[in-house]
Length: 300
Image (cartoon, rainbow, N blue to C red):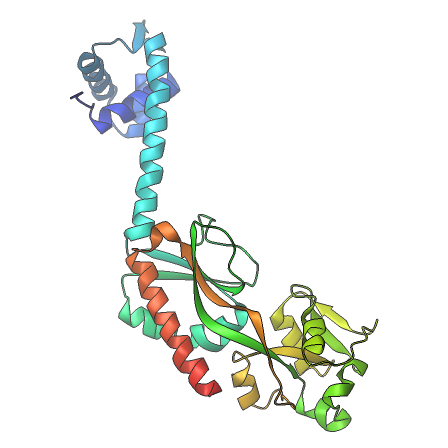
């Protein structure tokens, strides 16, 4: 079996090759020039190959040295990257999670201390957004995803929460206008640019007339739609059971018992090769239980 060189010798070799100087390499590595020279001489003896030409305190890579520089640089880069991924996948240090803003504000953040109590060795970093990105990005480990599963075979989609939609408005708006469900399209409707056919699907499912109007509002996030609705700007479609806290607080009302189950749901999404990650499993278990107890029980 080939005897591999010591890691410190390989690092000294790369640094000396980069600077073409033992002295500068020694400064970067916090060693003496003689120590760097000794490590590289030991590396050459082990390989039986001359890696540097030495002349009047100047060094230049030999053709063999140039080839080996590429090999060692690639190997150490992959080793560094692989070690980092291993620590992130199976370690208990940092877990980066992306959560829709409404779930984060209403459910996750108020109960975050319980996760930290049970998992003191996990540093949880939350990002709140509804953007449709996936943990294919290296800087996201797990996300709560609103939508439908994709065909990406590298990802796991675990359904956490089925959803339905229902028309909602402020109590004041309802008391002032008291629209029947058949009259909804005559009022200003608040639409989502992310699910632009939401109202159209709702009206079609209940055989209601639908007439788009130039006065309707189009907003780019569910949070913006709720804010606009709470400000009395019109009627929007609320997501059940996520909406329940606002209904309980009477910020908004759902005047009709009618709701429409939708294909979109809330999913936990993470890479398939991270199914055994203790940090991901801990977050998965915690947030699944949290949403079931806080949302579904309230909704019942």
